[in-house]
Image (cartoon, rainbow, N blue to C red; front, top):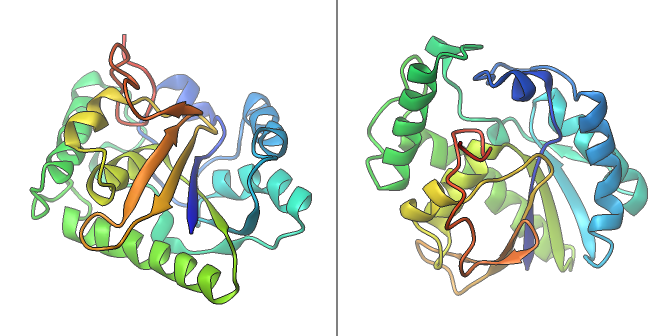
Length: 223
């Protein structure tokens, strides 16, 4: 089974560099809509048989062109939503952004009991995200699909892949930007704690990605 994790298109809080984790959240910007419209061509070589989205508006809008191109009805699951930061919602304060990222990075390193201020623990995040991914993969296998696409969120994708792939880790999380509509391609392994192998990150092989492009909490390059 191949799993494609797709970050949503651009939103205005992305442009304004704000922590924006509220549900349902804002729509895409005009640029975000164009990014979404480009996905079917960008993924034309993938045999996508199912499309899953979060409860946030930006994933719905991002998935629409793919759904139309592949003749799919997106499956919504709340558990795919972004890692929320209620205490810092819509803050652009660099200190808050650094603190948010510090919590996410600590989860990637294994400190899953740490709680996001006003939000969830790492245990709770991985439980909800794992549950949906497992459902999507299980359903896809039952239907004989070769690939499933999931439109989700930058921080969630980066944190989850850091602990669920056998060739990425917490250090890689710090070094891998994930741009709007960036795609992470995973192949299923034998299972266990690391049931996936990352085949490509935004179209590039895993080796050497991001060595000179440290990324912030939403996946954008820093600096």
